[in-house]
Image (cartoon, rainbow, N blue to C red; front, side, top):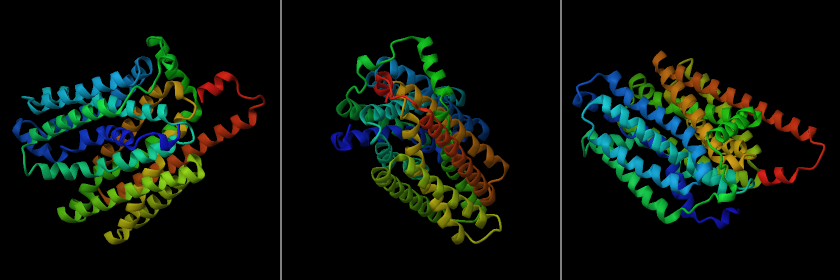
Amino acid sequence: MSSRTVPVRILVVLGALSAFGPLSMDLYLPALPALAGNLHTSAAAAQLTVTGCMLGLAAGQFFLGPVSDRYGRRIPLLLTLTAYAVASLLCAVAPSVGILVAVRLIQGLAGGGGIVIARAMVKDLYDSDTVAWAFSMLMLVSGIAPVLAPVVGGQLLHLMPWRGLFLVLSLVGCVLLAAAVAALSETLPRERRNLGGIGAAARQVRILVEDRRFVGYTAVLGLGSVILFCYIVMSPFVLQTGLGLGSVAFSLIFAANSIGLMIAGRVSGMLVTRFGPDRALTVGLTMGVLACTAFAATAIPGLPLWAMLPFLFLAVSSVAIVMPNAMALALLTHGSRAGTASGLMGMVQFVLGGVIGPLVSLIAATPTVMAVTMAIAAVCAAAARYGAARVVASADSAAQTPPTVADQAER
């Protein structure tokens, strides 16, 4: 389908659904100390509410992706949005940290469904020539969420207690439910659905795991997420505690990097239109490797902050070029199992990005540790992309016969 035939409102709604993860995790991060005090629990126990949501987001994408391949996109999406709104409301009235962790897990499961189904719908709506462009446009909407959510949450805390933030998330779920009802129709016809049960879903997963091209580009996506999550998790400690920035200056840097993500998302769409997703991904990875390496080169000798910030800006911005094109290339030959493929990609993204960043921050929240971790992730992403490209080249050179009717239908 041409990019011009899909209304902009659909992309906006799908982009908002793609922001469920960072919005659910990051909006209330500034409220963790108040939450721990109000529920008479430890800081470590309060952190488990973040872990519960993260696990739910990963599991929700993994399990609900195949569900959407079996039953279609719209009904599962509406059900998960309803569950998200209700779970967020229950979080607001949770009487203990144990109950809050359990409900946060449910909230994450529902939010993961929104993310994976939104990606699958993009693959349903767009053909292979325009799907990378569509993912880049989604980044314009969803890419700003992970860096602005903590700032917005901190401002909301001046107006309401920590429980009010979950009421805000419940309201967001209700708004998105209404938007989905109004703007989104079913995108997966019955004749294209995987009608088997658990066994059929397991076979779809096996096909994906055995596809080295899919695994390679999914690794690129996950490692790109490591760059972004390291920045989100570590920068408050690095820039404020370590380098002495005030809250206002820190917020301005966050805002600048958010603008960088938006600009890079737009640039990604332009690159895809002119050169295709493969070359656009090469541009993004080259930019990421150079920027992250330069960031590390300025951080290790302890150069002034003004010398590091331009490279940090470019490193964060590169993610908005890498991620949408890696998604598009991973999904290129898996249209009939887009939900399952998106679920696996989302799980890898949250496991790598959501675990490595916090784990590394436990070592030391310093500019050197953050920069070196981001540089390693960028280099590994480039290596994974090189491996995936070699698989594609080998397959192309080995092809001796024209594609079958089934192959053409798959694409």
